[in-house]
Amino acid sequence: MVFAMLLLLFLGASGAGISSDTLNKGGNITDGETLLSAGGSFTLGFFSPSTTVPTKRYLGIWFTASGTGAVLWVANRDTPLNSSSGVLVMSSRVGLRLLDGSGQTAWSSNTTGASASWAAQLLESGNLVVREQSSNASLWQSFDHPSNTLLPGMRFGRNLKTGLEWSLTSWRSKDDPATGDYRRVMDTRGLPDIFTWQGSAKNYRAGPWNGRWFSGITEIASYSGMFSVQVFVSPDEIFYVVTAMPGAPFSRLVLNDDGSVQRLAWDPATQIWNVWLRSPRDFCDNYAECGTFGLCNSATASTQFCRCIDGFSPASPSQWSMRETSGGCRRHTPLDCSKGTTTDGFMVLGGVKLPDTDNALVDMSATLAQCRARCLANCSCVAYAPADIRGGGGGSGCVMWMDDIVDVRYVDRGQDLYVRLAKSEFAARKKRGVVKILAPVVASVLALMVTAMYLVWICKLRDYTNTTLLQGPSRNNGSGKKVMIGLESTSNELGDEEDLELPFLSFRDVVSATNNFSDGNMLGRGGFGKVYKGMLPNNREVAIKRLGKGSRQGAEEFRNEVVLIAKLQHRNLVRLLGYCIQGDERLLIYEYLPNKSLDCFIFVLLYVCTNRSCK
Image (cartoon, rainbow, N blue to C red; front, side):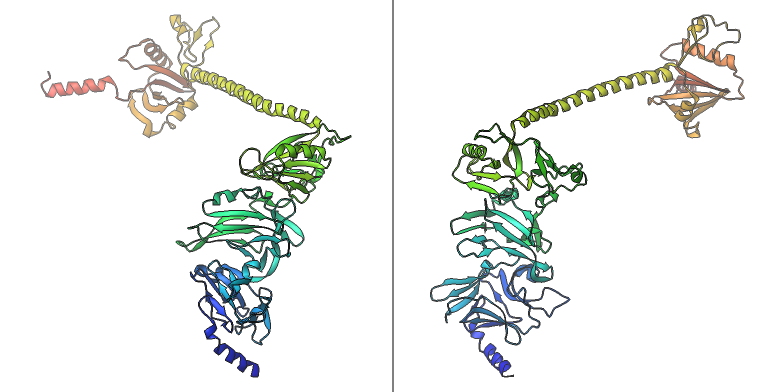
């Protein structure tokens, strides 16, 4: 009771220690109160990320416009308060101090060098800073202790002198800010590189810094108008920092609880976070997916993502056939490195993310030619590349890989990697290159030949079809002369008419052309049968006369009509195009007259002249 009364008295007397963005000595913030940065962009206060367990309370900083849905930093992420009785106080001994309901310290800034003039201020950058008011010197800042979010202006890397590491750790889950399974850190061995670790295993790698971007995240180039990405290297510290340009949207980089990384940008118009970047972006971003000397290509999903670099083959073909490629590849031919001389050479592997540089030597002062010579002189050197690609040309600086290379993939705007191979491999590559050149040429020629043969076949087939449907088959009558099939007279006395040939159509084609002699296709009816409109397979319209089975026109009359019309050729007479005989069926195929026949017009003219005066 005594402690509670003292705490209430302390809280009641502390109001004078709070301003909108600053917590002065003797001031405090209780659950429900907040600090607001000068421009209103950021808020410091208490929150519960879980709606199912609202009693767990945390002290954090969030982006004001989106509320606690975008918490950027959490003070007591592993020591939540179990009630809303927590209070943040400004202590002259340890700086900021978070107390629970019983007065126990749940978290503190642990600022050294006690002072009565300390004050905490929430800046418009989202950084919470403890300062010495008299000198304005910064003693502690939240930017030095990130949670799962990296903001513009925050350092990401390592202080080599003090051992302080600026890194990210994921939340345990979306509603639990406790330390999760994933860490995102900068590897300062070799060239600066960024890794995501899951426990003790590497999960993802951004690729070494090449002076312009991390070689596996070439999307950084698209931010040039809004953000500046820089890597600083000195004997004391190595880090990278993102600086927002004037007018750039507010953005944050988040390490999610599943190990993925997203760069999110706030759209004030729609009040949503747009995803600008996500990694890993695909299968090939999984660390060392193809093993040593393996090469991953996300565009070859139809075959296999992984293949071995030229000059290498799978170390375990049976495992690769089962899509287990982490065992990597081995050389076809050992390197030549005896007595200080070598016949080895280098193959250029273009457009890739450079390998992990854990086992690499770096010399930023060397030229690319010097890099090549040094690699050849070192029996352990298996590949080299320029360390800095700024300034055009082939780049500058030298990074050399020893013994093996791992985690190589194709990327857009990737770099050149020079891989060391035995001399005999170049002859083999030359042969394979000739095959690669000739194969498409031969394939093209074969394709053209097949196409030509197909066209010839089509033409012949069309000629055959036309001959069958428009000229009709004929057979020999034994005397060497061709006659119309089915039109021979019983006496076989054909005379000159023996040489007459007309197209013959199958009854099936006639049925198809007339829609099975439908009434909708019937043009008229005469004494000897009906006339139908038809459409031949070559899209030619015809009129088909079907002799009635009970008509007075027999075989002789049918033959006479065919002979007579076939021999009479005049522009004002309808042309006979063919015929068909199928059992009792006899059909004649005429030219179709879309404007009807001449007798219709003559009849109309006679009718008019009879009833009116004609001139």
